[in-house]
Image (cartoon, protein in one colour):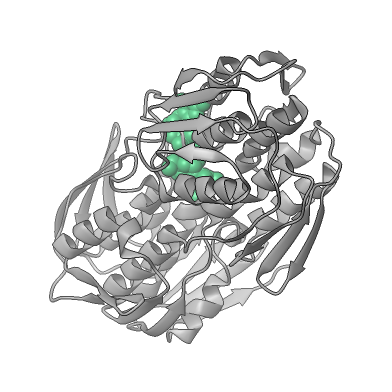
Length: 420
Ligand code: EPZ
């Protein structure tokens, strides 16, 4: 398993190209199952999650070909039963259920199971499918949704932590070919949901209200192929903006969209990191001393849970007390114990982490546990004195395209140690 070796203390300067959004491209790739015609997706990030989703689509019978950054997918004939092991390994693959149900009226996938950040139930996904007339069966680790026909209707997707991003994606993809009109109440409003809706509309779907809590879908009889460019990854952009603040540097986030990052930009500004527009890009830099701030993660347009860990790393460097509260997932503090190895002083009180920041961090070997926790450890290592070794960076490769290469181009002393 690869690791990163980071010699901290170098202010990062320069430009970084923000890749296509992982959390947009995965459901968009799944949506290509809704038509037998070829689709072309541009600005596809080279991530292990994307390679994995490609394997799943090919296993289902689709043909996929990568031309540079463009991914061509043709799902002429497909089967509705996804391989147990393939689906089990990547939770995001649950979003193939909606299109399989929409196109074949039947979808069988392995229950995704939880992960280190939480139980990750799919009850709201299944509620959406049942609202369209599907029968749900759970047996020997598989979940099956099937329907003689899908009929549009109302559904409420609000759960204990707000809405569900992939649940909204699945509901839309199952409803676009259903008869009649579907009303999704308490839909997720994330930009990645809007990007998926735009791709479905380009395929001929009739969708209104994406990006708002109420989405209306009028079913059509079939969808055609389409071409689409994936939105830039707002979480990657936020991660590099935080790295600029943590190392007292200045980074141009090429292609990043301010309108997807309002809560992050606002909070970073309060913390002493300015993120402002420069033409079609954003620029992030320190603005004087870092200030301790409190953060609570919320559904979009609130502060994103996927930036919580990285923000905690920044607050560990900041003199003062910062309270970071996680409202979306039940156990998304795996990075706390690893940040403590670098000298961070953080106490967990229920859904909150109390960060007593300001002591300089010193490098040490640390273990990545999940995608965004790994990013937090890299940010901390870039600012820590001495050398930090981040182990198991395969977690990071799931969601960040060539992060070590991009950081080196910004002046970071980081190298990837490949372990056979
Ligand atoms: C998506 O996961 C993202 N993943 C996550 O990003 C992101 O953290 C999350 O949305 C929230 O923004 C992808 O898009 C591939 P949810 P998703 O359903 O859709 C509960 C990353 O680091 N819930 O919005 O699986 C759930 O337990 C990843 O890039 C139910 O109760 O998340 C959680 O507490 C991590 N029942 C909350 O809702 C359900 O049926 C939000 O989950 C579904 C979800």
